[in-house]
Image (tube, rainbow, N blue to C red; front, side, top):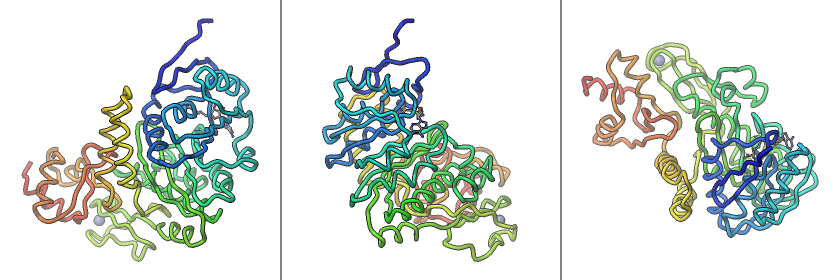
Length: 367
Ligand SMILES: C[S@@+](CC[C@H](N)C(=O)[O-])C[C@H]1O[C@@H](n2cnc3c(N)ncnc32)[C@H](O)[C@@H]1O
Ligand SMILES: [Zn+2]
């Protein structure tokens, strides 16, 4: 059989039919590798669901601060391929055949890559507990169970994340916040607080990279950022609240639905994302432009309140034609509101304006 190779970032990889490799995840790996670089300090890395070894190899080859790298996969063929690929890319690092959970009980690293099939939830307690003596660590988690997080299977979401999802027009933001809420709760169990450095939703997956800090105070502070998002399906009113006070929509009297408990804090750290943008300029990735577009949107939406407004859903309720985000944002800014585009949806905005003000502006635009 012909051996197939693939070039991605600074890695040249051999593929093997039975070992997982998804070329569509190159973009996610680009952003994750930039995040490793943006951490700045020297870190040891564990690529714990390594498959071909592509992430660990790229992190090491592309980032001067990446020190020791270990590769873990429970599949023997993945183990053999990752060994071969690490060697061919001159990346020194031990490759282990193991269940990541068992591995985390026995080893300690600064940066843990969790890239399993589906949800990272079962691995989170093991990952957070592995920091043991460390004061600071990093967890980079991918979730591909987007349908669960976005509310298509609400019982599965309750089971896996112990949270109610809502399948609505901002379900992807709810989903990221549900996953972050789960991470905050699991981290607190290991006496750690979390700080999201970069979080985004793209294609069929969600990616979250957090810094964790040891301490009871830090754990409590991050769990205090949990709450609920109330939402009205009739008028699209929403509010982010610590504990639901009323079930009645203040705008139209309809019954509200609630998503949560979920993370109500920041999804990303603007300073960190700006560092990633600087690094991206130097790297000449094949996806450089798409990465810049994503990171600039993520940076712009930092500091904005939860729950973006999908303009398409609003004009549908108002029985009006389509409206672009630019004229709406221009009018909102003229009225003194803050607003930003969002990476979640090209026809949506984040703003501190109430729904009534947005509807009023859309009506005035007379589309
Ligand atoms: C989605 S793939 C990883 C993809 C890879 N990180 C990449 O970027 O191409 C998931 C990998 O996790 C491995 N895996 C699944 N469950 C595991 C577990 N409990 N511990 C360690 N590896 C596991 C699978 O064998 C598979 O190779
Ligand atoms: Zn309402």
